[in-house]
Length: 177
Image 1: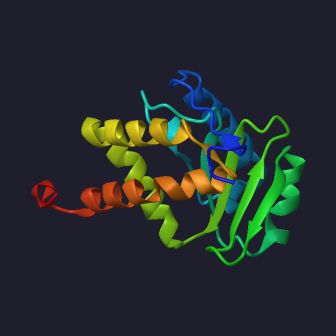
Image 2: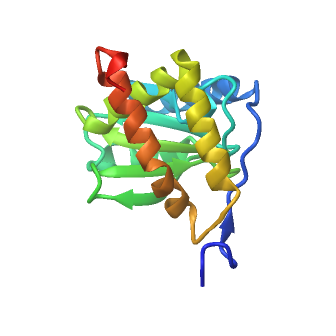
Protein backbone atom coordinates (compact mmCIF):
# COMPACT_ATOMS: atom_id res chain seq x y z
CA UNK A 1 0.00 0.00 0.00
CA UNK A 2 1.38 3.42 -0.90
CA UNK A 3 1.27 6.41 1.43
CA UNK A 4 -1.63 7.83 -0.58
CA UNK A 5 -3.86 4.77 -0.04
CA UNK A 6 -5.35 4.82 3.42
CA UNK A 7 -3.11 6.16 6.12
CA UNK A 8 -3.31 9.24 8.25
CA UNK A 9 -4.11 12.71 7.01
CA UNK A 10 -2.22 15.50 8.76
CA UNK A 11 -4.47 18.49 9.44
CA UNK A 12 -2.78 21.87 9.54
CA UNK A 13 -4.59 25.03 10.59
CA UNK A 14 -3.78 28.70 10.22
CA UNK A 15 -1.93 30.36 13.08
CA UNK A 16 -4.22 30.79 16.09
CA UNK A 17 -3.73 33.92 18.21
CA UNK A 18 -4.76 31.90 21.30
CA UNK A 19 -1.72 29.58 21.12
CA UNK A 20 0.59 31.85 23.18
CA UNK A 21 -2.11 32.09 25.87
CA UNK A 22 -2.60 28.32 25.82
CA UNK A 23 1.15 27.93 26.29
CA UNK A 24 1.16 30.44 29.16
CA UNK A 25 -1.67 28.59 30.92
CA UNK A 26 0.09 25.22 30.63
CA UNK A 27 3.47 26.73 31.59
CA UNK A 28 1.98 28.29 34.72
CA UNK A 29 0.33 25.00 35.74
CA UNK A 30 3.49 22.99 35.11
CA UNK A 31 5.67 25.55 36.88
CA UNK A 32 3.36 25.59 39.90
CA UNK A 33 3.28 21.79 40.03
CA UNK A 34 7.01 21.20 39.66
CA UNK A 35 8.49 24.26 41.32
CA UNK A 36 12.30 24.17 41.19
CA UNK A 37 12.25 20.90 39.22
CA UNK A 38 11.07 22.87 36.18
CA UNK A 39 14.40 24.29 35.07
CA UNK A 40 13.07 25.67 31.80
CA UNK A 41 9.64 25.83 30.14
CA UNK A 42 9.54 27.01 26.54
CA UNK A 43 6.93 27.28 23.79
CA UNK A 44 8.39 25.37 20.84
CA UNK A 45 7.16 23.94 17.56
CA UNK A 46 5.06 25.61 14.90
CA UNK A 47 2.49 27.02 17.32
CA UNK A 48 5.30 29.15 18.81
CA UNK A 49 5.94 30.92 15.49
CA UNK A 50 3.47 33.72 14.67
CA UNK A 51 1.95 33.29 11.23
CA UNK A 52 3.01 29.67 10.73
CA UNK A 53 0.51 26.93 9.89
CA UNK A 54 0.52 24.12 12.45
CA UNK A 55 -1.26 21.11 13.83
CA UNK A 56 -3.65 22.48 16.46
CA UNK A 57 -1.54 21.29 19.40
CA UNK A 58 0.80 23.47 21.47
CA UNK A 59 4.29 22.00 21.90
CA UNK A 60 6.06 22.73 25.17
CA UNK A 61 9.63 22.00 26.16
CA UNK A 62 10.08 21.12 29.83
CA UNK A 63 13.63 20.74 31.09
CA UNK A 64 14.09 18.90 34.39
CA UNK A 65 17.28 17.82 36.18
CA UNK A 66 16.88 14.24 34.89
CA UNK A 67 13.99 13.08 32.70
CA UNK A 68 15.00 9.47 33.44
CA UNK A 69 14.20 10.11 37.12
CA UNK A 70 10.43 9.82 36.67
CA UNK A 71 9.70 9.45 40.41
CA UNK A 72 10.91 13.04 40.84
CA UNK A 73 8.21 14.53 38.59
CA UNK A 74 5.68 11.94 37.32
CA UNK A 75 3.27 12.17 40.27
CA UNK A 76 3.50 15.98 40.24
CA UNK A 77 2.68 16.14 36.53
CA UNK A 78 -0.21 13.71 36.94
CA UNK A 79 -1.55 15.67 39.93
CA UNK A 80 -1.53 18.78 37.69
CA UNK A 81 -3.63 16.90 35.11
CA UNK A 82 -0.94 15.80 32.65
CA UNK A 83 -0.70 12.17 31.55
CA UNK A 84 2.44 10.35 30.46
CA UNK A 85 1.83 9.30 26.85
CA UNK A 86 5.26 8.20 25.67
CA UNK A 87 8.63 7.08 27.05
CA UNK A 88 11.62 7.18 24.75
CA UNK A 89 14.64 6.21 26.87
CA UNK A 90 16.60 5.52 23.64
CA UNK A 91 16.13 9.14 22.45
CA UNK A 92 17.56 11.56 25.04
CA UNK A 93 15.43 9.99 27.80
CA UNK A 94 12.50 11.91 26.24
CA UNK A 95 9.10 11.74 27.92
CA UNK A 96 5.86 13.10 26.47
CA UNK A 97 2.91 14.28 28.54
CA UNK A 98 -0.40 15.77 27.50
CA UNK A 99 -3.52 17.07 29.21
CA UNK A 100 -6.76 15.06 28.89
CA UNK A 101 -8.00 17.28 26.04
CA UNK A 102 -4.71 16.54 24.22
CA UNK A 103 -4.35 20.13 23.02
CA UNK A 104 -0.69 20.20 24.07
CA UNK A 105 2.41 18.02 23.99
CA UNK A 106 4.85 18.49 26.85
CA UNK A 107 8.30 17.23 25.84
CA UNK A 108 10.38 16.45 28.93
CA UNK A 109 14.17 16.23 28.63
CA UNK A 110 17.12 16.51 30.99
CA UNK A 111 19.27 19.54 31.64
CA UNK A 112 22.09 19.58 29.08
CA UNK A 113 20.20 17.60 26.41
CA UNK A 114 21.44 18.55 22.94
CA UNK A 115 17.87 18.77 21.61
CA UNK A 116 17.15 21.82 23.77
CA UNK A 117 19.37 24.14 21.75
CA UNK A 118 18.20 22.58 18.46
CA UNK A 119 14.50 23.18 19.29
CA UNK A 120 15.16 26.74 20.40
CA UNK A 121 17.48 27.54 17.49
CA UNK A 122 14.87 26.30 15.02
CA UNK A 123 12.05 28.21 16.72
CA UNK A 124 14.04 31.43 16.92
CA UNK A 125 15.16 31.16 13.29
CA UNK A 126 11.57 30.73 12.08
CA UNK A 127 10.47 33.68 14.21
CA UNK A 128 13.19 35.96 12.82
CA UNK A 129 13.62 34.81 9.21
CA UNK A 130 10.54 35.14 6.96
CA UNK A 131 12.17 33.25 4.06
CA UNK A 132 12.93 30.21 6.21
CA UNK A 133 9.49 30.40 7.84
CA UNK A 134 7.90 30.41 4.36
CA UNK A 135 10.09 27.51 3.20
CA UNK A 136 9.05 25.49 6.24
CA UNK A 137 5.37 26.41 5.82
CA UNK A 138 5.42 25.39 2.16
CA UNK A 139 7.16 22.11 2.98
CA UNK A 140 4.71 21.31 5.78
CA UNK A 141 1.67 22.13 3.65
CA UNK A 142 2.89 20.04 0.73
CA UNK A 143 3.65 17.08 2.99
CA UNK A 144 0.36 17.43 4.88
CA UNK A 145 -1.51 17.07 1.59
CA UNK A 146 -0.32 13.43 1.47
CA UNK A 147 -1.46 10.51 3.60
CA UNK A 148 0.99 9.00 6.10
CA UNK A 149 1.16 5.74 8.02
CA UNK A 150 1.43 7.86 11.20
CA UNK A 151 2.51 11.29 12.43
CA UNK A 152 6.07 10.01 12.94
CA UNK A 153 6.38 9.40 9.19
CA UNK A 154 5.16 12.94 8.50
CA UNK A 155 7.66 14.31 11.05
CA UNK A 156 10.49 12.32 9.48
CA UNK A 157 9.62 13.69 6.04
CA UNK A 158 10.10 17.24 7.38
CA UNK A 159 13.50 16.47 8.90
CA UNK A 160 15.61 17.39 5.86
CA UNK A 161 14.30 20.95 5.68
CA UNK A 162 14.45 21.31 9.47
CA UNK A 163 18.12 20.26 9.46
CA UNK A 164 18.88 22.73 6.67
CA UNK A 165 17.24 25.60 8.54
CA UNK A 166 19.07 24.74 11.77
CA UNK A 167 22.39 24.67 9.88
CA UNK A 168 21.63 28.04 8.31
CA UNK A 169 20.79 29.46 11.73
CA UNK A 170 24.02 28.12 13.18
CA UNK A 171 26.06 29.53 10.34
CA UNK A 172 27.57 32.96 10.97
CA UNK A 173 27.37 33.75 7.28
CA UNK A 174 23.98 33.31 5.61
CA UNK A 175 25.83 33.62 2.31
CA UNK A 176 26.94 30.00 2.82
CA UNK A 177 23.58 28.78 1.56
